[in-house]
Length: 355
Image (tube, rainbow, N blue to C red; front, side, top):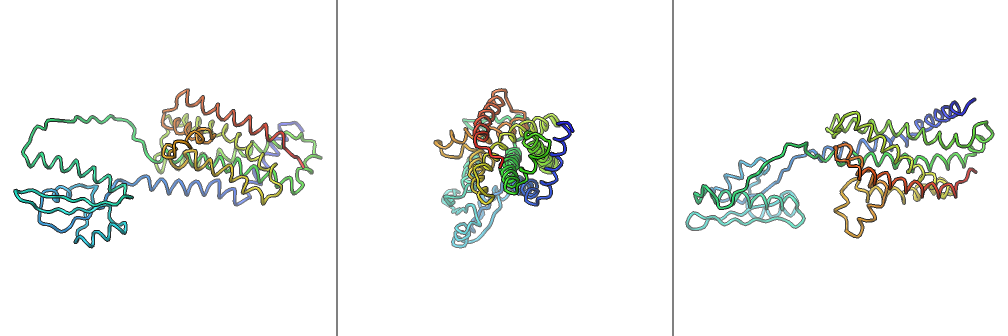
């Protein structure tokens, strides 16, 4: 029996064991798709601000706002509208009072925590400026703005979200999957039985890596397909873009498999795996830009984020998908992954236990 046949036999056995484990299917397929659907639906909503207007005599601002599609108007008295805004049902409310000489005083009320209220405040400034010019019969304003819209593919929230879900898959398959597999084989004396077979020990290491890569490639393909065909995720060059993304994922998965093997050798029992694995998974998920840009984090924390391997995997996947990947970006991504891979596998080889 040659080396290749032994490798194929082990890969088949490993894939059967993985697919018979319900948790592998849930974490590998169900959770990423649930997150993708939820974030995809949230990201697809259009801007809509709910504004209360206190009952007042007819005025030109009221007329203009009633024709703005992104503004939903709620009418009522001041006390009722104030209570609604405090409760979060309104983003802002207006109090419009008439003044002598056909003038109007407008009072705007918002809450400190309402981003939509701040956006409406900016919108209102523009609307009142245009309205004042019209009421004063000024046809040519002193300062004019020329706005030219460039025809480029718009950036959608799904283009940021989906690579983060791919990172979730890679971390789960690489760290949790690998760690549980090796410590389970060791505790149940399966490795000891495998040693009496004619297969060299490298078969088990390479075979486990290959089976994880095959399963991850299927998971990644499903997530990308759902993202592209359901939520219009950008694949700038179609199949070639997809293959490039899979290539990055394969390299990243090899590094994360090293993390998983390291956890399996540090942990003494299966019960010790979750806390150790989460120490490596959760910081990367939270600090790598998987769910939100790292630029919103404190400045002192951002260099730490930039040192994490998943940060550069996410950046590379987003760049490839949208066509914005540069040679510098890809070189940095693979350079960081290689450095982490050397460090992780160096530690793993030193502490690796077969029994």
